[in-house]
Length: 309
Image (cartoon, rainbow, N blue to C red):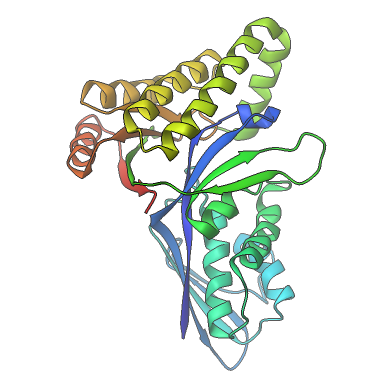
């Protein structure tokens, strides 16, 4: 038997702006992960999915989403006669990179089971191939966060060449709380909406994008310097820009307001918006508990995370 982990991700800065080639900052989350456990069997490729409570033979049900996602790995590594069990503390379909974490965890478990000697870079490359099944032409940021569990600087190459992804090292942990709006937004529709409004109001949007460009540069310096108060201020400014481009909703605004009124250093939506999650930055674990409780009292689910460990 063998096991492997793939980490969740959080976008700290860059929602929508990265689509236009501006820098983004995202991080893997080492205390939020998917874990795959493998064991050799006599025949078949069985997937025991404890997240969705189902068991599938991946050879017989090739149209099942997890079968399609994992097919590039199973084919390239020539894997057969294996049972894979999945467990996860990541909530699927909440913008935390579940599919990438799943792929990385399975690749690492198979690597350990069969002593394949894959490097982290090779794990990451394979996970990207899995991501193309789910997302067509993904940025690569989710699988890189899932592989390394670290802070990343990301820039989309606007000429179709390889994106710039640089792994950064934090000098101290940062404490965050996810707040769940309880709503779902369509990333495709939200991205299209921003593009349409940008084309209709070019001068207004150019000003927003220029402000973000300065903001993200300051944010990277503040993160690497361990200046959590500055990071919080920049998160608040980033949220104001996201409101301006029309991707926040009342529930996300309320969560941000609740967090800030109760001592958070900063708060903003994370992901495409229109629903999904927001994040609040706090000073310590005690404040994480306080903010989580405030969210619960107001009818919102929450998850406490740390980055930079």
